[in-house]
Image (cartoon, rainbow, N blue to C red; front, side, top):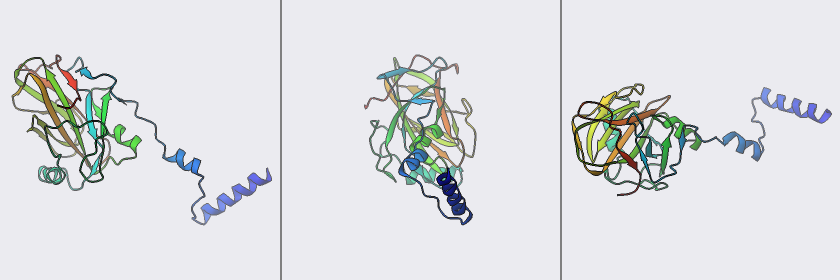
Length: 231
């Protein structure tokens, strides 16, 4: 007991003097260890159908890249042009390293929700979630050509979206994720593989996104298959 009292007095004295406390390796490991996100999981199958409401729940997500500036159209587009993906039609593999600042890696993820929570993705990796760009890629297999469809998305915060290499949606300013907040013009889904690329730019706080396709009558399309296999 005397040893414990002496150690406690020593610790209190260190705090009073504003000195750093000694930390064992075990304590340091415990402090830095972070549990995996409960909303996310690694894909266990080669393909996945969109859910009953049409939401795409399988994505390749790149570790966040630092950025700065307001979430205005000009600032966001400048940030994305400064740190672009090399090819909007290339589907990376899990574990691939992007030739971008910090050499970020790609992670294959299934979300248990309609949206993919980027904070939940980055936090276990001890990656920042504020003043960053998250890139995400997925592919949609359509059983037939579908004309007059729309890509409908929501994001927190700003985001830009491409379908088969064409930019089709832009959202700006600090905003919450709202289902179908951004809706593209009428598009054509090709029969077979279609590539979706998204860039979500977050200033601070929570960050996430969601996406689905709407048919010519603006009803969710549910007969689509999601795959992360390279083209």
